[in-house]
Length: 263
Image (cartoon, rainbow, N blue to C red; front, side, top):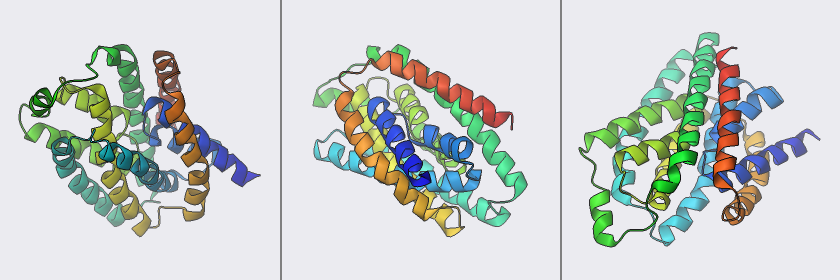
């Protein structure tokens, strides 16, 4: 019965990711902590590999359709992956099950969820005003940041946040990309966000696995539910009321974030 509940949780999160593009960590980690009583460090480590597996399929499809702007992905990854490795090294030295470390994780996770709630609401309000299609010459201009240091620094901040909380590569990442590359069409922004999230969550997840912060049987059970959930969500997205779903999701994330901070 417990396994069925995990499969259903995976399906629900996969469905929401398919409908909204919001990273699974924003929902899965709070569900594991509050719904199933999983220790925060195990919930975070398991969810990182859950996110890597679920987003890999999406990235392959986007790469085949040539929607991914690889220069954008490279700059973000140049900051996020080293930052993830440093964060994992610090966690390894301190011990992920250390009560002080778990307190930092839950507080940071709560703050990350509040940021994600704000970012999700921002996308619900402003997302429609971003262009959907531009030509090749305009894309070449749109993927040039004001300075290459900006996406690297933002990538480092997201890499640290994701490694500590498993949250940040979804809604926060998309919002950062919208600010850094305002002329880039929204589908290409989402594609870049998914593409750089795969190596980031994989590196951070394997780092957590190396320090014993991954529950492998739980990961397998969640993926059984999430993969069909993402498949269904990606097909329903054209018919779903985007702004209503994102607004409701932002309220749910804000509630979960406030609860984590108050622990």
